[in-house]
Amino acid sequence: MRKSALYALGLVVAALVALGLVILSSASEVRGARFYHDSFFFLKRQFLYLGAGVVVAAALAFFDYRKWRDHWSLTAMFGFVVFVALLAVFLFKPIKGSYRWIALGPLSFQPGEFAKIAVVMMVAVWLDLAAWRVELFWRGAFWPAALIALMAGPVILEPDFGSVMVIASVGFLLMFVAGTSILHMLPFAIGGLGIVGWKVFHNANRMARLFSFAGVAPEGGGTAANSAAYQSDMSLVAIGRGGLFGVGLTRSMQKQNYLPEAWTDFIFAVGAEELGLVFSVVVILLFVAFFFLSVYIARKAADRFGRLLVVGMAFIIFFQAMFNLGVVCEAFPTKGMALPFFSYGGTNMLSSFFAVGVILSVGIHSLKDQKRTFTRKVLAN
Image 1: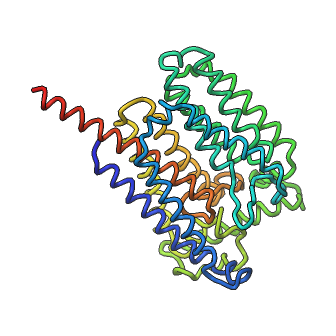
Image 2 (image 1 turned 90 degrees about the vertical axis):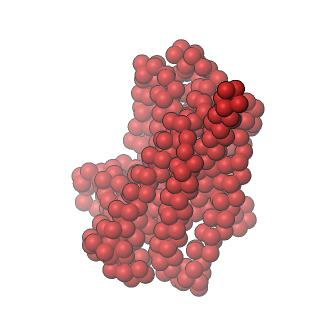
Image 3 (image 1 turned 45 degrees about the vertical axis):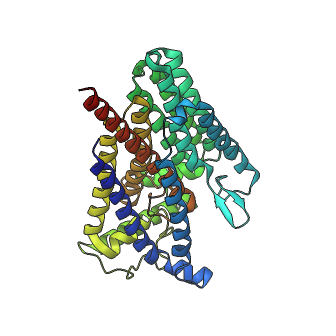
């Protein structure tokens, strides 16, 4: 493990956050001025979320990641709290037809964001403690799949298909990396896809979005279809207007109430319009650099548990980023999924920095182990 990899990862995250704040300050100014009489309303709140996220990341970075496994009750308690929070969302009023938020006075958060983190931690602990038994059906496939289902179940009832997709994908990825047989995983993967497919088929809004994406939505095919098509069209218009170098920072036309969710799910389109293709390429390269630096840290981790944690946390951020960019560019059907470090929102910011903190913890403590081992060898000679 090289210390430079940890510094490089920190710089990449800092660059993503800095770019995110710059674009958010522009993308949210119209809505802030219109509804809160403050062009920087969202930016100010994002700074508060950022501060909290940095504190969380710093605390986790210096917390020995192995304690999550050695004191597995700590991980179980974290998972239990998240599970209870996932059930608690049904006690609050739905927003846009989904039960995703817990509102406590002026504060609100989405437990589904932390369900992704909880799945990584619980499945990683289980698989590492199982050791060679991951090759067995019950230890390596059934119980990890049960942990995934425990978190995915309430989330799909909200419904939040995007979070379910992330939870299931990262869970099965960890099983594969740990050495679980693909044949053992296959029945659960097919069963999970079947359940999600059935839920989507019986959800008019999601089906309308799929038809709209496929270009076969009937004439006047409903509010959801028209809304999804409109979002995609306006997003492509923004990207097209940006050209190579953009129209200039703060000069986006689409943020003027043309592009819905310009400050959250479609913030990348505003950035592409104002700063052009150069911005788009830089953002993509930064996320790719984040992923490969994380993979390097995973390869150099002191133990399998560290490798599993890093792979899982890095995948959550990278997968969400690539999916969000795919939606904005109309490569995927319209689906609400935040762009990490860019989209406005406290829950996603905190969960993203939670993941970064865990990755840094594995890197820092693995580096310390390597130094101790080297010192012992020197003294022994």
